[in-house]
Length: 217
Image (cartoon, rainbow, N blue to C red; front, side):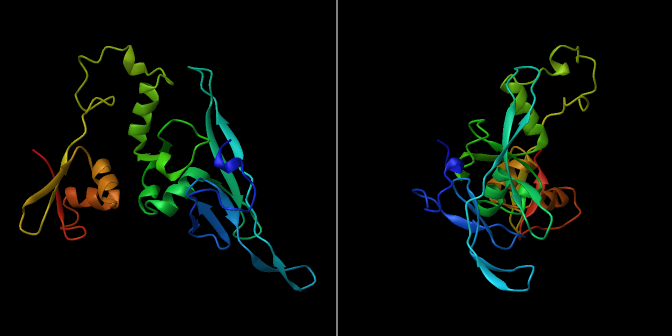
């Protein structure tokens, strides 16, 4: 039984709750559960009444996979910041609350074990869209056209043929502190903003958080 299937109000072992940014009266847990909190509401007659919080039921969404026949699964919840519902991906809520709210806007959030029902924070992995696509190919869930076409005469920067560029992190004196295989990896390991590192690497910013960033030669 997955944590999200427990709809009782009692906390599960090791469960931690944090607020969902941008949504009053909602919290998400480290185990992938979502709840509304106790609050007061005004009814149609203008009376202010208490309303108890509850664990929200999560909706399963399936994405068809023609290669394997086994669909990918995501879990969603409906949050109500006003009268209209907002349908939110649970793993993105968990990652934003417990790891990095800024980084989640730049990247895709994936399940480490590829189990869309398991949205515990330890099972979540951020990545770029290209990294997600490579992961899908590696797991045999998609047949890429690049696997059977002749790319020997293609330019090296076309058709996804270009390699990632390593980047270095330097202090104010120009000393190399760390190096990473890509901008996305640097952002992930340092809990930094991907776009800010990218702008620094391209010379649009001199520094980011006191460091300079450059492509490695």
